[in-house]
Image: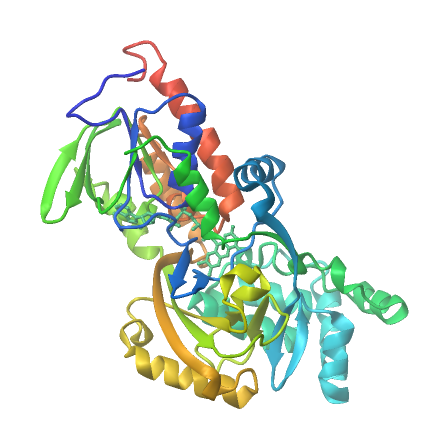
Amino acid sequence: MSTLRNGFNSIAILGGGPAGLATGWALEELGHTDYTIFEKSSVHGGNARTVRFGDFKYDTGPHRFHARHPEATRLVSGLLGPDLQEVNAPARIYWEGRFVDFPLRPLQILKSGGLGFAVKAATDLVTARIRSRNAAPPEDFQTYAYNWFGKTIAGTFLVPFSERLWGLPGPQLSPDIAGRRLPGFSVAGIIKETLFGSKKSDHLEGRFLYPRKGYGQISDKMAEKLSPGRLAYSQRIVGLETNRDRITSVSVKTGGEVRTVSPEAVISTLPITIIARMMDPQPPQEVLDAADKLQFRDVVLVALFIDQESISDAAVTYFQNPKYEFTRAHEPRNRSRDMSPQGKTSLVIEYPCFRTEDIWERDEKSIVDNLVRDLDQMGLIKGSRVFASDVHKMRDAYPVYSKGYKETSDIIKSYLSQFKNLWTLGRGGSFFYGHVHDFVTDGFSTAEGVRAYLNQPAGVGV
Ligand SMILES: Cc1cc2nc3c(=O)[nH]c(=O)nc-3n(C[C@H](O)[C@H](O)[C@H](O)COP(=O)(O)OP(=O)(O)OC[C@H]3O[C@@H](n4cnc5c(N)ncnc54)[C@H](O)[C@@H]3O)c2cc1C
């Protein structure tokens, strides 16, 4: 084990969100307690927290655990035991006064839209598929969506929604935003659905794992795995001093005071853009330009507390019409009954935005009043039953996958990779639109890498 310097530990973990906590937990599993997690706020969990409001609990956005990675599922199941429960709740889209399933079901969309819409959508879909058969892979999301779903369906559901979510016009978005969320919507699918119907329960979106006490329970349980005093709150990282190929020290601000610590290894879960900007000496201009080019989307969350047993059975409701500033709502009690007191429910609504947009600073009462009016007019809630509200702001929630984001983020990543005692991971640290299961496994592999680095003979690495 390496030596302590300046009274601090040999490993500094920057950020106490899921990625930082998982790395701390992994180090503990390796028998290494010589680390500190520096978290700027007074709570851990980052953007995957559960917020308390009186007897209610709500998550920072509608989280669910994706059992996509067996090792992450094993680790998180072991962490939560029977509190990790299976939920089966559908996702739906509010479409001009009616609801359709998400993921989109071809036949349902065609049926719900009326004859004119159905004919146009089906014709567009077939034409798009024929035209794009031998076309080059699309370079932007709008072309991808038009090629894959046809202009009518893409233009009704996918493009306007994605533009609002990501804050850029469809032609400026990368096709990568489609990720795993837009499964097959094929001509064969329509025929299959027409002949055999569809089994709703087959939809991946509807079945997931969820902690009984809210998604933040995963972070809470990871924090419990840490040795006492390893997680330091209200410690904002403000600088990284470098020397050729090493991070030599980290500047930490607590209250009004800045102090410097010199860890042997630095594991950062902070956005790579912030890390690049806080380096001393400054990185080359090309790296700083890349940091200016990359963006993160922020989110304003509004929680409404409602004097009513339940609103619906949906896990989430997406809003397709771009006239609304909000994109999605979820009812926490549909994930776990522990989220709301008996006889009452809540609804949490997301407003994706950049911090430079008016909504970020807008008077909370006017946001809530307009929201309640809109939801009431849609028939989703009875406005008079809303008895309280809470507004929660989330910074750097989504790395924006603009066209060319990969090349731009690679410029920063490649620069950072020259520092042999620096590891970056997490949503911001890898500029990857990943989920908690991704970062739990990354935390464990990073901890292994750091251990190997620290165990190298003197002169090789440390
Ligand atoms: C609306 C929404 C829905 C989501 N749905 C899901 C889902 O269904 N399932 C799922 O698994 N994931 C979901 N996610 C993603 C999940 O929230 C993230 O993957 C996760 O929060 C990323 O963890 P992280 O540790 O990388 O970053 P963060 O959670 O952002 O944590 C970073 C931490 O670093 C701290 N920090 C920042 N700057 C500094 C500084 N200068 N000094 C010290 N500390 C600092 C922050 O305070 C924060 O605690 C969703 C996210 C959003 C926004």
